[in-house]
Image (cartoon, rainbow, N blue to C red):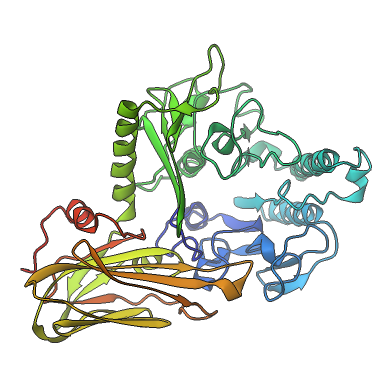
Length: 495
């Protein structure tokens, strides 16, 4: 998960985009959380013809411009033709009612459709509707159970609506969760050790239910699958071609009692400025590693036992596998073309551009070169060289640095923009400038709303510079080694 708040990038080919091209009516309802600040990341720019809900839960209580808080009661919602405004009722009921209304109208149209309904329940704050709260004890656990019961009731209402409309037999229903519970009011992850925001089993393992009576046979499948497997699997079940180079695997053979070929290792990474977590799941060796701890299969059980410290020799193997994977996914793939004066870098707009998280730009430069604009992305950053001096401009700050006597050296710019959703006044930018493996400058500065434009023009790179490497990491250690591994070549200013 690249650590930024831009969201899902324009170049990402999404499930609703593929379905929409195949003639499906595509609708998103509820939670989004895939980009709330930039319209280019909103649902209607990611394949949904209609949407209604909230871009980020912290805007549901006071709207997008008020104090950042979440609520289920009379929430602020928005969407296609719906400017942000409070809607009377309980959030779970509102979303369920919206889905039921669309099911009825879509059934009348007799055309294929896809509804992406992402509830908020049972996320905090725990605020069940009164009619469900009355069924449970007035305790923290009771209120949590009431909110789960309300979610369960809503799923039942949806299935009833599908049956009443005559759509049930032709509809595949998928029920999934994004992560394990927080275990604050109740240990809802038993018997799995760990919780949300960890890469222990309790943080990662969630239910997945597929239902289409009369088409899918009843039964349990205990093979591991991943959320990213849903896109290729659902497209296969819909009889549609699956785009190439997806991260996920088609798990439909499991529905027929067959095996699925997949990589034996899966990796996770969450990183922010000064904090990170990582996980490695080895399906072949049957373990889940979290930092320096490891979980192994519990004897005779279908889950892992509690974590233990990884022996040093084994830890090195885990660390190497993780590093190789992280470096492979951190480098931003770009396309290079040439015009009369520069090389033009395009593709992967969000990750290619600094801001909203971690970003590193590396390029070999020649000292005492004529005055030239080394690199420039309009509205986002520029690097200018004048002889032996470099000037870096980013929104909100400027750095100037002498290159020193070395004829050719690696210039590395690493930035991290901390955008605080809860406290916008604390948003901070951090920039580190390095020559070779030596840090020469490091600054922090305040960020302001609207500082970055929601447009992503090409990055123009001087013909005089060496081979560039752009990465989604705040890279401050072993920068030369990283550049060599990422580019596959030595540091050279010869083009």
